[in-house]
Each structure stands twice: as structure tokens, then as C-alpha cells.
Image (cartoon, rainbow, N blue to C red):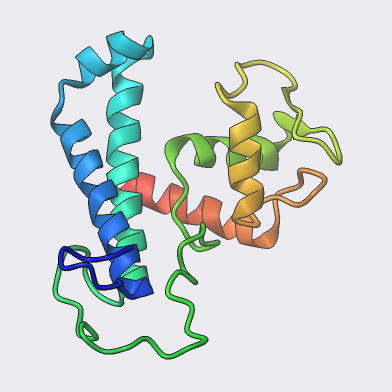
Length: 174
């Protein structure tokens, strides 16, 4: 990529420009009427609001980790070259110390209690006993595994139990 004067941009400048454009797109989407967006794509308006809020929070946290400072703020390293070998996006993936979303916390609690089970070696989640299963079982199982909250057999890990504890503590504070 090149800047307005035709000079090549550094990797950091290019990554920052892409991240800024994504943030602007999310901001434009969050300013739109969620009910109108929901009707256009055929989803529950509350689900759209929750998704937009989560996406904005996630992007802000990722930008803070990627550029070493608050999203949209001044970068103390601006103008300096990035040392080779430094991974700017090392914290861009899900972190095992995240606080679970409502859906993730519910899933961890149900898996830990045995109300929900995952068929070993698969992403097939089933509800055993009473109560409904999750809306997006495949995506939910992937999210829990990405954070190491469940193992390959679907059992809640030690890290998953700690995540469940953080989720329950956050729920008590509300």
C-alpha cells in the first residue's frame, strides 16, 4: 500500500489504517437503527445490539494490544520503525483470561454441571435433561475451545472453571 504521496507505507501504518477503517465501519453500523438492521437481515434486534456492543468492545481491546496504547490515541512509537521479529498482533486472538459472555458463561455452567455435553472429538453439543440448548452450538464450542475453556472431549478445563468464576463474579456485581 502507498500513502497519498505515493510512498510505500510501513506494515504498522498499513495495519493501523485497516484497523481504523474497521473501527469507523463498526461505529457507522452502531449508529444505525439496530431494529432496522435486524429487520433487514432477519434477526432479533436485541441480538444485533449485543453483537454490535461486543464487536466494538472486542475491536477496541484488540487495537489497544496491537499498537501498544489506547485505541484511537497517540501511539508513543509513532514514527519509529518496528523492530524486526516483534509481533504486533500477538494479543489479537482470544485470551483465556477473558470474562465469558452471557452465552459462554451459561455454556460453561451447563457443561460443568453435566446438563450439556459435547460428543468427544466433535463439536456436537447436546442438552441432556431439561432446558433448551444454545442457539449457535458450533460457534459456541469453537469459542470455548479457542480460549482453552474446554478440552477436546468437551470437559471444562481448570482455566474454564476460573472463567466461569469470573463470569459469576461479574454477574453478582450487576
